[in-house]
Length: 333
Picture 1 (cartoon, rainbow, N blue to C red):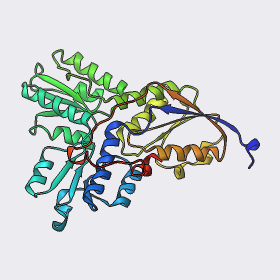
Picture 2: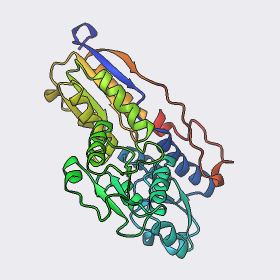
Picture 3: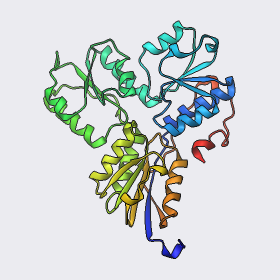
Picture 4: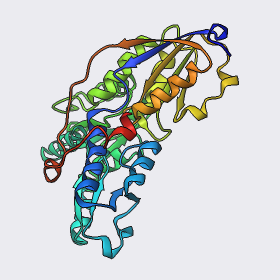
């Protein structure tokens, strides 16, 4: 098909999109650990919620395990990395008991939520955690405090049904990757029911989640289709799909790779919105764009709200190791 025969398409490419500083740091930690200590480097759970990233790190020598007892005795001198989502206190305690050397890749903004929850607890407040049951970040946050110290609220309906032991001594925190609008509704209902509910010292939803949702809201009106690059187990990516639909996109889908695109279902479109969750690498965004360019006379326009400059330092043990563009080319291109 020649260029003239291709139907025109405007791609509204969102900025910011893709990797946040916490995800970038976590991947760097695994890459630098491999450079410093050699393979294998063990990683407990997915370092971030993205299969492409996990497979890329496996190709470099990372070994992903669900629990620490899967690490062979002969490799206990090798580092084990904890994921960006954070872990319960019991996990590093287990690592110490097994004489394992661990590197904690918990996002600093998740660690901040842990500290907020611990502060509420220290001041005698029962902690209300707004988040999604079973998500690794929720498991990690709840695992910072004694059992029974935290109540999980997922929806406005949960907020309506919640009956605390002491309604005057409650403090809330939230998962960092929630929908800003949905979470505001849950908080408002809790505050309505419990006027003495204490907020955290700073907003728990992270800057990257907020920024990606805001630009999708701006870009969505008039889009025939909005594609979010991300994994089905990525909370922040799934929220972006919902945000795009609410903001006016006719249709919104979550895609991990270009090969998943159903061209018959996509059909004739003239405006495409495109963004990526905080765990999705830029190489896949480029892959999606090229797939559309093969079928459309595509023009890319940037829909940008802010520029992110945040940078989180890696663990002290790794700061002397050089990180090159080539080291990260598997995700950054």
